[in-house]
Amino acid sequence: MKTTLKLLLVSALCVLVLSPAHADSAGGAGAYLKMGVGARALGMGSAFTAVADDSTAAFWNPAGLALLEKSEASFMHANLTLDRKYNFFNYAHILKGKDGKKTAVVALSHVRFGIDGIPETRLATNDPTGTLPATDPGGTYTPGKNVYIFSYFDDTETSTFGSYAKKLGERWFGGINIKSLRQDLFTNSADSWGFDLGFLYKASDKTMAGLSLRDLGETLSWDTPSGHEDRVPVTTTVGISHKPTDKLTLALDINKVQDMSAKFRAGAEWWLKDFAALRLGTQAGDLTLGASFKVQTWRFDYSYVDETLGEAHRISASKQF
Image (tube, rainbow, N blue to C red; front, side):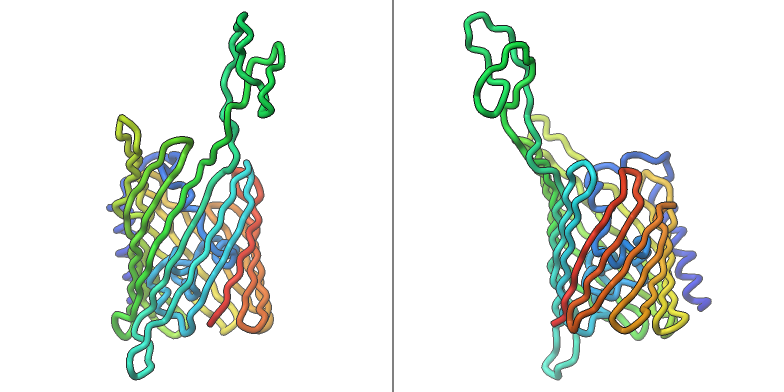
């Protein structure tokens, strides 16, 4: 336990040193990358860095993929406020040697966030020649109406990443993501490459410590004449999880987004039966709730988060192979 506390202390200092403290901002580009995936983790207040024992670990802490004993796929869909849609799916596959023993775990994941069907509006002009532009999609002009819809477009952001994780030692696990980012807005787009790093330390059979460094080296370069670039801020998270009993897991994370202040996340997961679980958590002061139900190799998860922009409900599912 002393080793775990030392590790968390060193990691926390790294968070403060590597990410200068500034007043809270909008979070910079790629804000959707901070929202999290999987209703299970979100129901625990996103305190999942040192839990990370299912295929969604590819997002939270890629080192956790090395804990998988079976290949697994996960899916999530959410209709958020302000017409935002958020989708995630991934598949984690266990690699085995000639002796049939696990050697490593690889995964492929995809996240899509966006708003579809945004109207492009323009101002109509008072043209005496009768060539006024249409004020509705049907192509007709309404006298006295000053704004017309010219077209519809989407604002979408996507992230596709491949993961590799393995056991590094008796108590250590490591993982890495190689990521491709893209944003499409109206007639322009931006691209970037980047990577994530993750580590897990097994302090005992009941206690784990984790460190996650996400969105390293990511800068979205736009295909505009100015060549504008948007830097994606680095997210550093340290966490610890503890299982007082086989059915109860407690977790605590310290999350630091670059140029923003550090925030605490905490959560608990309680399996009432082998097929049903309840969750409770807090994410930077916001209440989170969750539940799960297992049917054979399937697990269905639900989460509720009381966010600044309104209540968010997410549903996800996972299947083992």
